[in-house]
Image 1 (tube, rainbow, N blue to C red):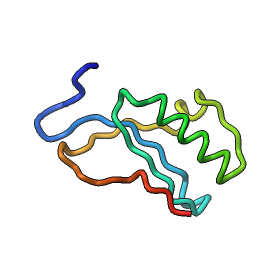
Image 2 (image 1 turned 120 degrees about the horizontal axis):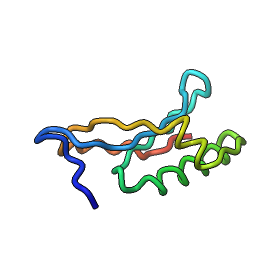
Image 3 (image 1 turned 90 degrees about the vertical axis):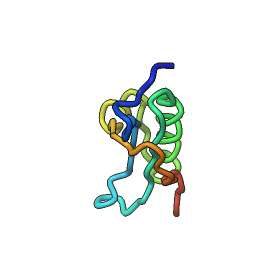
Image 4 (image 1 turned 60 degrees about the vertical axis):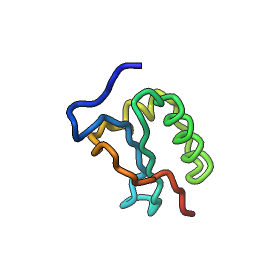
Length: 83
């Protein structure tokens, strides 16, 4: 595992979210960079189950995954899925 800390205050994470303006869905998931596979699988399952659409893991990664900076020590848990 490589260190992904950019400086003393931020680290890099992967994030994916449904387009709330279009779907009205509040799904948003953020995780460590080394957990990419799980992020893609959870997102694929969410889209299939909640929106009835099928995407490949590659399509999700190319079109919807963003790399974001996150403050170190941030205690926010954004993995909740409200229906």
